[in-house]
Length: 285
Ligand code: GLU
Image 1: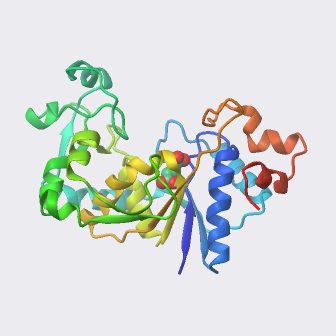
Image 2: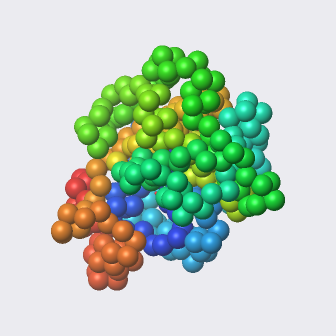
Image 3: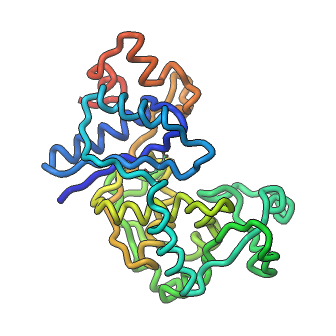
C-alpha cells in the first residue's frame, strides 16, 4: 500500500518548507488511498526537545493533516539500529574513528567542496586504528562496501527511482556510481561518538520498518539517497520510490531555516494566515 512518511527533527518549529513536504506526502498518500506516517527524528538528544515535538504535531494538525498513531520516535529505536550496525560490522564494513572535526580538516591536503556530509573523510583511522579507550564514531568503509556488493560494475545495477528531480534535473532511474560514493561521500559516519545511530543509518532502518513505499523530502537530500540505497542493499532492505521536491525559499531566494521567523507556521498562524493560504503560498492547490 502507498505509504508516505514525514520525518521532522524536533529541534525547532516547523516552517513553510516543512509544511510543503508534509502536505505533498499527505496529499499523495490520500490520493492513493494509502497511509501517512509521522516519525520524530529525535536522535540528536542534545538538540531534541519535547516542546518542539508537541509544537510539530500542533502545527501539522492545524494544517489539516492526519497521521497514524503511535508516532515513531527514533529515540526508541536503539535496538534496531544496533542490529543493523552489527550486520555491517560482521561483514567487516565498519571501523572506529576517534577524529574530531578539527583533526579531519587538518588532515585534508586542500580545502574541498565536500560531499553530502561535508568534507570527505581522509581515512586517518582506517589506516591507523585509534586507541579503543577514546570515544569513537563508527564509519562505513565505503570502498569495502562497494566490493561487498560486487564492485563498481555491479553497483551500477543498483538504482533508485526519482519521481521528481535532483538538483541537476536528475529524474527517473538513478544508478549508483562507485567513484562518486567513494570520492564524494567517502567513509560516512553511521554511529556517532555518543553511541547514537547517525542519520543515514537510522533513516534507512526506519523507512523499512515503517514500510515506506515513498519518500518525499527536500531536494537538498538528493545526494544522500545513493548512500541510503547502498545501505539498503547491504542490509537487505527494500528501496522506496523517492520524490525530492523543490525547496521553499524566502523573498531573497535563500533556503528557509529554522531561524526564519516570518516563515514559521506558528508565527503565520498567530498573524491570522489560514491553512489554505499556506497551501497557496507554497504553490499547492
Ligand atoms: N529529519 C530530516 C530533516 O528534518 C528528514 C530526513 C528525511 O526525510 O529523510 O531534515
